[in-house]
Length: 160
Image 1 (cartoon, helix red, strand yellow):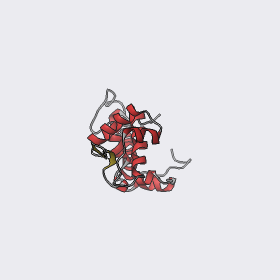
Image 2 (cartoon, one colour; image 1 turned 90 degrees about the vertical axis):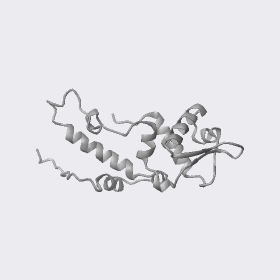
Image 3 (tube, helix red, strand yellow; image 1 turned 60 degrees about the horizontal axis):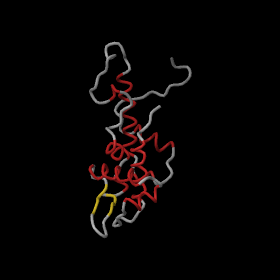
Image 4 (cartoon, rainbow, N blue to C red; image 1 turned 180 degrees about the vertical axis):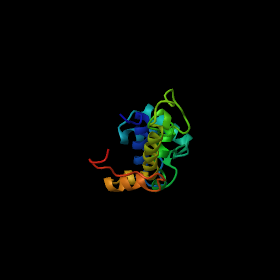
């Protein structure tokens, strides 16, 4: 099953929460943890990783806390996920120029690389602003296929 890690999922929840807040507001770890129903230690760990990736700003002091560093419409899901884990890839061989033990006998590498690019294209095009509204299947398919250099045939039951 294809899955992002729990920390990447939590990062998305935290970022979507911050995206709904006023741009100039800052929130403590405790406030964010309470709002998103996660433990403070987990929220603190995720926020440090998001801060290191420059996706959130942190300020110390009485009026300090964390805030989103940018417009929700300009921060992609890919950026959030990549801040927590490496760039998403479906298989080992779809991680850039990586190879595996079966390169010489397996002819699926280029297909997995294409599928991985489609997933990444979609994650790059979906923003935090998008995530805070209902998404529709047609829009997601358009996002995934937009500007993809490789043509994918629609196959029907008669194709072999």
